[in-house]
Image (cartoon, rainbow, N blue to C red):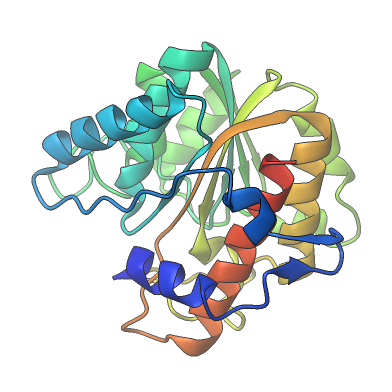
Length: 249
């Protein structure tokens, strides 16, 4: 229900962002908006989402996917890699999502970034990561293509983000898991973790990514409005607007 909740909330928000200095509707009037519901097995869902994303990106659209479970990112990521080649992936998240399997599945919210780095020519920058299993920690330590920044490292400055971004390709896909936020700000997620990011940090990170790279696709996932709706859905919608304003500039 996360995607539908964000889409509905976008219609309730003031579309003007006072920090950016413009609103979302004038930009979106030039673009198609497509809402596709996918209800099938993980592999079939990923394939369906990849085809949908390729359909729009081949026509010059900016593809912004709303979820839902984080596995939905894999289809649009594959489509972006097919169109643009080598990618940087900027992942705002509480978790690494780098397990090879989780509960017997190789495709799940806990494995999506593992599938991405295994199947796509990419460099991964995880920001806000504060929960890893030993398997994931070992992979991060041994890989030259994965960098993680914990929230504690960003308390006084975003310079670590700026420095890490320098190692990414020009074309970047931005994936935002709502549990990257601290649960005091976004309790409506499936797997909250203490010690997360706050709104101005996330907004500044989005601005910094857009200023230094070309955002060629994005998604916002893992919203659970049945757990808590008001604060988390509003924050998710505001985050979506910031991503779109910066990406469509």
